[in-house]
Length: 109
Image (cartoon, rainbow, N blue to C red; front, top):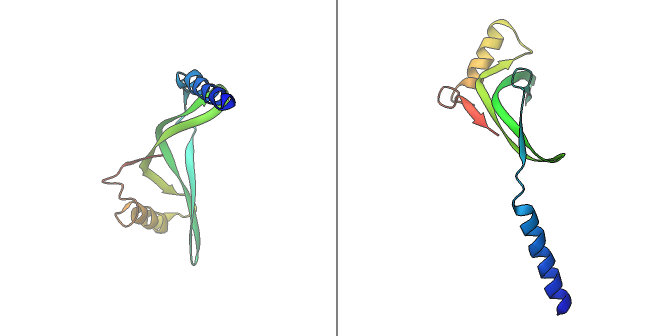
């Protein structure tokens, strides 16, 4: 029983010791960062990019502990097509059939 009490005390001290540690957020460089996507369909695939509006990664020392990103969904572009095919696919992906970017201009991850 004495071992159990010592064990519980160690757990309590451990939680108390780390409870006050706050992660350090490090902002992403939105000018040079992007989401690269690739989507597959029965007859092939398409790829493209979406830009970030902001975000950060949370670190506790050198350990990544979390983060949050805001993605600019209206910046969604297809990089493997050009001309009318590109315009049509981007319009379709931004429509209510997929991401509905008019009503949902950003996404949070």
